Image 1 (tube, rainbow over the protein chains, first blue to last red):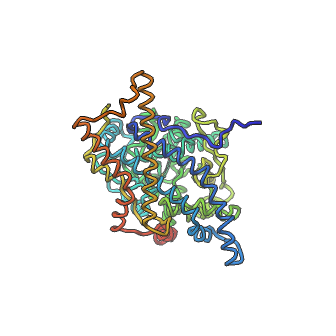
Image 2: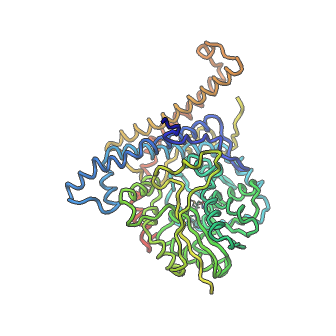
Image 3: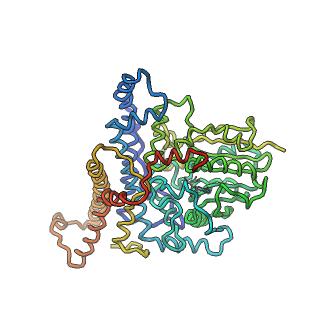
Length: 404
Length: 130
Ligand SMILES: C[S@@+](CC[C@H](N)C(=O)[O-])C[C@H]1O[C@@H](n2cnc3c(N)ncnc32)[C@H](O)[C@@H]1O
């Protein structure tokens, strides 16, 4: 019988991304460049990336075993070994270059309309008490010294008054690097979180929610829509992200989020036990070993007894995960400017949550799959192949705070 | 051609350079020869640009055909007037800046902090140092 199923899903064109009030204008060639990137990422992930495992098993492993009379024991050993493997390097060169072309493309789009974008955001944000910026905030070193995902100027650099360009660049590229797999508004992670809470804690009705590191609000908007009566506070250290996130949410009809420029390391503006739910999404891996426990402790402090905390991330490395897979998942740490990724993913999250004050028996690990609008894809086919650290398959590390 | 939004304090040539800026830190090496590295990056950029050009040509042909406007030799015989020629040259400048991004970044890599992500990874995993 002939199978009609294609070897991989064709990623949607960027024109399928859902627009909103601060979405930048893309001309024909800019759209074409984004379309090329989405398509090329897909080809590389499905056709070329599997060669890494073959190269490891058929070339590198024998070389290592001969020398050491054992197989590599850690992802770092695998990395040192594979760093001299020609196939792996060629694949890496392609991936790194695609990321650089993606940044070039996004920046060229937003830089030419940087003032128009700032004005559109300003119009939506004008006099709105739901946006509070604090220009005296200190950008933490793990953000200031690293241009995450090769994004020059990082999340926070401002080139014009009221700048939102870093966020607009991040937003347009997010749809392309995820190949549409987390939806037209890139909200698959947030939908997954909201869905998990509704399913697993159906009588939990949070009145006050805190999101740490909201970025452009991709994940928070669907959560705000799922809990329309909740008062939601979203913090980030970057003014451009907050301006954009607020304007974006407002233009999407979401008005129950208050955006505040603040670091998760210092929540002293909030009193103890003042939130029913504290969450973060795809956030912890961009911190540092010093900041992460600080943020978890602050989060613990502000959660009410009986309240919830949830942190969504790619799965942690543990002994059950083969060292080769850990090595592949670590690629972005060294090659896509995500240097804390490697340490973060080997932290014992349960212990980290215990250290923050939570009780061991109240801690849980939940697997969460991205939920998408099936007009972009046949959902059933998603996530079938492993794309090491990029699939819409996350783990949520969370806990209920003990009732006092 | 519909005018695209250009509301920026930066002129087109400046934007072409800024858009290509290098991210902080030392770039990983994939080839043993730095020239091979540059060469490959140029090739990848060209791959993108060719894809863009093909999509544009495809758009054009579809529009023209759908309107019954295309004459079989018209594109082949087209010559721009002076102003159009100038506009097209600006596009050529932006195009070359994009394709030569790796060399621009090699220049940028010769000044400023070039700490590797390994160094950063060590630093950030130290609870007293991040
Ligand atoms: C990868 S993004 C988060 C994605 C977002 N939560 C989502 O689900 O779409 C990381 C964000 O964290 C912010 N950030 C980094 N350190 C922070 C801190 N200490 N406190 C608050 N925000 C921080 C950055 O400015 C950036 O916007």
